[in-house]
Amino acid sequence: MRFGIHTLDEFEVSGRVVLCRIDINQPVDKKTGSLRDITRIKACVPTVRELAERGARVVLLAHQGSDIEYKNFYSTRPHSKVLSELLGREVQYVEDVCGPAACTAIRSLKNGQVLLLDNVRYCSEEQTLFELKLKLTHEEQAQTQVVRKLAPLADIFVCDAFAAAHRDQPSLCGFEQVLPSAMGRLFEREYCVISDMMENPKRPCLFLLGGAKVNDAFLMMRSVLENGAADRVLTGGLVANILLLAKGKHIGRASEEFIERSNNSGNIRIAKELWENYGERILTPIDLAGTDDGKRCEYTLDTIPEMFGALDIGSRTAKAYAKEILAANTVFVNGPMGVFEQAETELGTRTVWEALGETQAYTVIGGGDSITATKKYGKTDQINYICTGGGALIRFLSGEELPAVRALRDAALRE
Ligand code: ADP
Ligand code: MG
Image 1 (tube, rainbow, N blue to C red):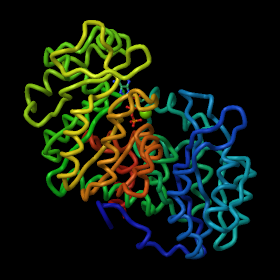
Image 2: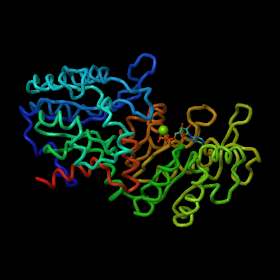
Image 3: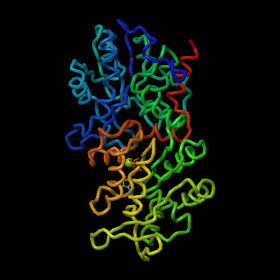
Image 4: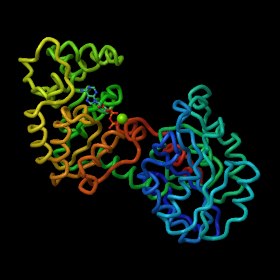
């Protein structure tokens, strides 16, 4: 047991049918349907390999795409091929989630064999709209089609989908009601890394919050400042612009218009409150950068031109942040420092990421664009932990209990 949840150490799996929920949701090339990244598929290999090597009959359940963005609502067939290659053993695939074809394929499995079912979100009960509209309890989720059909064929349920642990859906929270349940190795590791960071970080502990998802950033910021996990929060991107505005600084009319257009006006009030309560631990930029005629231009805060649009932190800020990172012992990063996709406005992100590569601190990065930046600057091997779960990570750090964690804990308590 760890965190009140069973681990794979506590179950005999040989000869048993183990139903394992993984998260291998990846960006898909919309023209060819092929996978543009395989980070999450790689990350679930240790659990699947261990189960197969210990002689389990492994049934994998996963989703691809969301119903909010139907465009990447694809089959999991390509994932089965990638997983086969990574595992060095065949991963069977069946074009069915919980109908007769899936059930037959599960019954035919032999010890050590692995089967991937089709995209579980082809079942409407698994979709986000269903989740948000109906708000089923976990008990009710156990009554859904996917659980009623698959659970009787399985002996043990394993949840290894930490990246989806914030979803309150049957494939994540329903099986725990009716099957002995454990978390997989990836789940265990990710949970461990981020709960250590919340409860027991080596100090000084910095949180770098940038990017454009300001609501999420402010939720995390409040939570880590309030519970004391963060000694300091360093801000960049749109998050910093809004804090500066809340402090009454002039950051240029284009910046202000962008904040309004991106529905962030309400966040100025939240920023003010954060600033009043925790201002001495929140760092904001001392200079900002934008573009003029396609060239980078930088200004200190008191010299910002009237029409300016801030798209990056300035080089003095970047240097100051790098210094903080080099002196820290724990650094968590979510969100780039500027529009790093463009050459003129990448300096802030590049400088900070260089420091992340260099520092002796324990470094954790989460968030899609932050991971893209890590790859772009060739820092993947130098970061201690790259978390596969964006949404789950943000909610955990915001102090919320994750539905899949609660389901796994309840399952352990019932025994
Ligand atoms: P992550 O995916 O790492 O969680 P976000 O999605 O919150 O990060 O933010 C990433 C996006 O924010 C990038 O596309 C980047 O271009 C954009 N961004 C960064 N700084 C600014 C800024 N000052 N103004 C507008 N957009 C920004
Ligand atoms: Mg993003």
